[in-house]
Length: 302
Image (tube, rainbow, N blue to C red):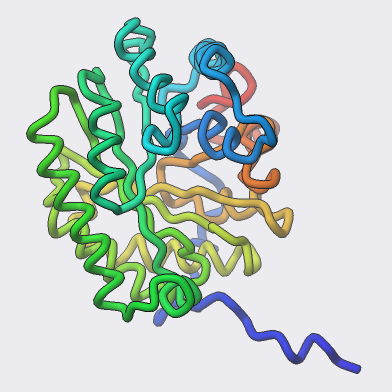
């Protein structure tokens, strides 16, 4: 019996697959590392970290040398909310460190998030909505235009609340479940968000491309990222980011092959999302041993 034939591929190749990334035989610039241990990692624990544990972990990440740290999902619980408020009110965020918070593209969640980050010296507000075929058809029961409108409405609300809230904010958007989304459609949604934010070279935003469920070989993701890179609007005003997961054990390869971007989300020792996020310490040890254009300081930071 050939049971494998009953399964269909869950990923989509880009309309144009050029393989230009193959011509690059080494990485010639360091990425910006963003730790997601406090959010992506914490959400997978049977008993999530307490406020004191999160504060201790945050200080560890600062001591390690991370300059971008995703601290949590403030609207998810009172602990998450109070953690963000404590970092701000006790002045625990160093001048050279940017914190990041996550929010769904839903009005009440976005509003609660901005309450949490009020007064932040510099915070990335990361908004997302799922764009995959499965989510559109089975969860949202909406068509492509309706799902794109969710992203547009979220982007508009971020811009509005940022103008009304004390603090220094950068915007970020993710087409969640990108790995199950038609690549050209994902780009269309991202560009619609960018049209709202109107980024410039001096005021950049972040577009994050996640392998929410790793369902293809690493070179497929690299080709998808290349298509995104070449077809995003306002490219000089966009930091392209990767969030590699490790469902198939290919998280490090996915990160390196897709590394035309300049930001990588990682977990130091991945215990999050069922241990599926890219292990930063493994990736950077690999880069360190390759002895190429840069070396990782403190074991895992460029």
